Amino acid sequence: MSKKKILLFYPPGALFQRGEDRCQQNIDDGSAQAMRACNDLGYAAAILLKSGYKVKLQDYQTQRDTFDALLNDMDSFAPDMIMMSITNTTIFDDIKVINELKSKYNPIVVLKGALFFAPEQAMLDMIDFTNVDYLIGGEIDFCIGKIADYCFKGIGNPAEINNILHKDETGKMVPTQFHVWDDDLDSQPFPARQLMNNSLYIRPDTKEPMATIQTARGCPSQCVFCLTPEISGKKVRFRSPQNVLEEMTECYEKFGIRNFFFKADTFTINPEWVKEMCTLIIHSKLHGKIQFTANSRVRPLRKETLALMKKAGCFLVAFGFESGSDKILKAIRKGSTVEENRQAAKWCKEIGLAFWGYFVIGFPWETKEDILLTKKLVMETDPDFIEVTIALPFYGTPMYETCKQENLLEKSVLGSDFFHSSTKGTMYLSLDEVMKLRKNILLGFYLRPKYIFRKLKECISQPGVFVQYVKYGVKLVVNLFK
Image (cartoon, rainbow, N blue to C red; front, side, top):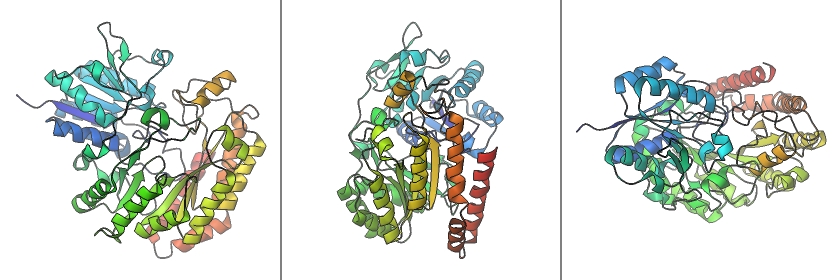
């Protein structure tokens, strides 16, 4: 009996972080972001390969392929099942893709996305799932293999697969048990990078391939705009540092990858884990040959943790500063203060570690004065890079409920993103005023002579990096004025 074939893909179209449940960021309209590796597809592929299926993995959007490329693969590979990662922004276009593929080829269809985690029926009713068989709202590596085994081997029962929706005998999508998470992350195979085009996912400054390595899942924070505690749980589930190092070693030795993004909602939340991880790297054969970046909160954080990360090869740390207003930080339940934002930036400058500042404006409670305080913090902390996004009320978050109660929703959250908001603005500012303030912050930061000369100085010995900086600078200006 021939092996069943499964196609895993991101569809053709604009660049979105489809593997990122938390942000699903629009890369094309951002400032200096680069696409991260399609680890959700990679994990799914590894699980399916282990179960004996024939798998093809394609990231059509990042390859800048057309719809014809997808159709050609459907013709030549002839998959029995297809699985696509969706985003809240692209869901309606994604469904159009599925409808065409289903009508022409009739495969079993699986969609994966944060939108499907314990969804409201009212939201499901907005989308036509006629040609969809399964929805994965949880962690893909704990679902996809069981779905395939049921469909092709008659093993198990969809009702017993956690964190999915499946069709009942009437054709209605019904949920299984949600808010259930698996703890044994070390038992999962590494993403099937042999099926991924690793050259697509680059370090923004050097254009070298960069692998994404998931070091932990879950976040105990209560930020009102974030989906992570809902989807991945409030308990942080760590992989062992040794298991992470083994994956890094495989990337380096088998795929020639020497740059890594450590994916965790807050990499530094457990300083003892970070210490063990960095110490392992320092005493490994990889030390001095690899570099990495990671996300961090400003609380909890220690200067010695940042210093150890730099010693182990960290070239940049990204902080979710969010706001320069303590009033707003409290309203969004960030669990940190403006002074702690300043302290994190100060520590990075003292040890010579580059850092990225993420800022969000347009929260329901925000006034112009609050946003100007954020601009002040941007200039005071003077990060190496920044991004300023518009607060987006994802379904399932407290911020969504607030926007609904305050009549701030201009249109459906579906189809919106951080640069094309679904809100009318804040309780005090129109969306147009918020967008103008965003433009003011970004141009005021990046076009400063001090900043430009600093970056030029950094590029004296790295002409390739200079080219990348110019490229992202042009992109920023074009996006802000188009």
